[in-house]
Image (cartoon, helix red, strand yellow):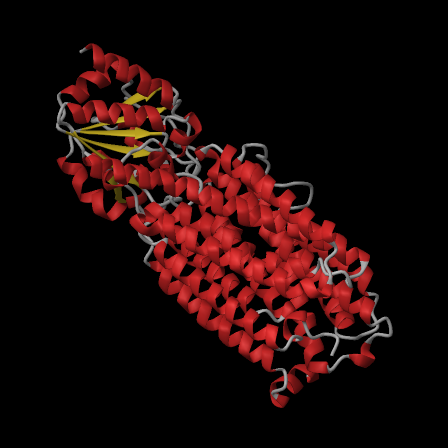
Length: 484
Length: 111
């Protein structure tokens, strides 16, 4: 009996709570539906936010009869709300991937803490242990609680590692033994054992639950680090999507712990959403999820052949002249544009060209940047109309009718080697930029991209290398173009 | 193992089954909805979905009830704070991002 969650106790009130939760679930679904179109997206986000507000208010109202510990409730809401608002207002658009990674982690750890608190409560109410628990409830509770802790912890520590990597604060692919595959397996086995012991104890067994919870939380936190640390920067879109999915699944598991249907619905929606994005990202790199998570690109394969011959370098003045005589231009942005914060300058150049009746379009590779849709957000920030942004399959046939392609801060996504056999990126869909009359590649050096392989695009006859920081290169070109 | 069998046979562990039904259907709905989202909106979608996963806040609030043990309340306070950051920050930043998409749209109409 004591295992019954509070939400199932009431009589009349319970019906209203259930009805409100149902409404909230419906609004979440409608909100996500509206998020799928640019025109309705902002209102969709608002609808989802209202659903959350309803859920929170109803829960507070429902539980208020039991007497809140005010500092816990009001303090937590105020502090969290304040920090959340400040983060959301202050963040640079280029730092979105970091912020999303951080938020993912917080959602995960919150689920972990709730499950943990529930285990503590059940334990404190039943110091005697098993006698008062009916078996099936005990099992459901224990399994769900342990899953919630496990997924929550992996999401949390994994997201923090992803955050550090995205913020450029962590370059290592190992921390001590963490990141080593056999060690990960050991951690996983240990975590499963600890999970078993906690579940056994929570379901009424005689194991020392307190110690085992600490062991479980510790091991799963280490596991999260071990899983994400070896993954390289360019695979971050996949990792963030997956962690996003995990944070939803953790909430879902917590829903089973609390017997709260709304948590299950909302959590599964997010879980599914993250999985779909993960799948899209993997497809865009022609790699399986297992390969991204456990394989890593075999960078050693082509290492001997990184010499470039016949590379032509160019300057802002040359590029301005080439652009002046062009009729159509396609811009291919990559992570380098985000790093250089060049999106506003790119937009400025594009509007100069458009003023001279030159057609400007943008070709966005699905894995350009560090999270799904990263480039789109940056260009939106710079007020580039989204009608000018094209996906890979929409624009790939257009390159051959294009005068100038400007590649800014992208590398592997326009590497012709993808069409050859036996390279690290063979079969990955790429942008066929070399079909254009002239390709200007803005890049700081000839260093290889994440895949660690040579890009023969740079030595093609129609390629010009503009060796500079993305922002400075575009600024120089703009200045020269205005002087023409 | 015995216990799990009992759960399934007795049918009195009905929340498990209902819960799994809900899980299954919600995942299906999620897949259907998200597959239709264009790449342009992937980042806002992800941060919006992320804010929704802060629904665990509802669970965290139940930990603030006075009859929880001390450790439970400390965990509850941490959970409420972190989940609220997730929820408020997530929705606010998604709104900010989508505002940039929208303002362009209206500017275009104005032209």
